[in-house]
Image (tube, each protein chain N blue to C red):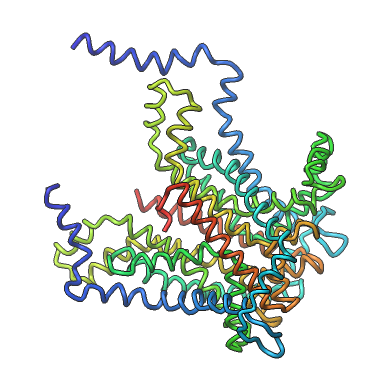
Length: 287
Length: 304
């Protein structure tokens, strides 16, 4: 006993304390923090464009393009709809985003329950069918839908954009919700059954509330994918159905109004706030 | 107690009884029909379009006109090869930049983990077109980046490599690859984070106890265990990057056009649907083949 104890204590402590000490030099601190240096540089690379978007929403450009800093101004914030056509495009994007999110979330959640809860023949085919749209480049998806619509003489516009958006959001909702279902503890549902809950009660009171955060995350992802899509949308839109990304892309050729930066900044602040509140709420609930 | 739980948990999914195939099929049908009608059927239409002849005004007929493919490759081989090269470069850069970031968040961030994750996702909440346009400001000829490139004479190196032209960084291959890397970096970081987050730090301590240097421990322990994340991240970066045309359009010049620019131009401006469809089908097949080879070589089947 006495022979074991010292060796158990001294060996690791010698390694953790004594070993680094002789090597401690400026080079060592650099080596220890090099991961943080690289990570910090990566974060700057990720966030710098967002800072530029926010900063340039307060710019007063001289020409048609808002690429170089001139002077501080609140004009764009005072008149967010001052750019002709922009708020109309924004409204269309929000409308498509909401409908596509609701549809894709419903369809995707049903599929996720089928794949996450049941073993059946053809399950791997279904998994592949869900995976393929995510592995397809957007130009291919957009152009194939265009070919379908043109061949069937289906007129392009609001409906075709909506069909496309539901399509590419669907897979992401399935993957997100399925991950949540896979992480559920099956004993919770068994406990409900033991307490004489029928299948419907178990689903409504136990399963659904537990899966709900996954469904919410899937819906949030679907909305941001839909709201931000340009490539697929552009293939399936008509000149009368201009979404916000299409407006921004068009303005890159004609002249960028400061108002697009105002919208970009406002969306960013809203989204960060809602994610922050969500995190805060879930942490309080966990306590 | 622990002996009772496992049998009940394995029996739970089959509570539906004799007709247990019915509930999953009913749940599956709406979504599967949507994917079938608007994803699989269009791909068949696209493949059919690529072997048709005709015009938009007079209509098209299937004539097994494979010359659409030879025409497409004779005229647009450069853009095709360039797309794959740019996508490969930006995937490698995204891996080199994203790995330390994902590692730091997963293993070293402690209680700041969730805040840092939000920061990685936050750029998504501003339109990617606006963020790509912001790179025009960052890389513009009087910006900081160009100043740095000029003062360190890095610009003569990138000029010699053909990555930049003259004394500007904007409208060059370098700008396009930087834009692609930037745009798809979160798609690299998130899967890497997911696999590095599961890495037990005690494994690294064990490697150290067995006299492995930090580099050996990384090569033998961290990297193999994060391989599923590397595979998922590289695919999520490479596939969209190969088909992208926004970065080439907004940050490049006429010598940086990618296959996405060509497909979109042929479909929407030139209205040569058959050649555009041939290019689209070729891109899809190339990516499917490359992905299949890569996944087999990397040896993970966790993806599907």
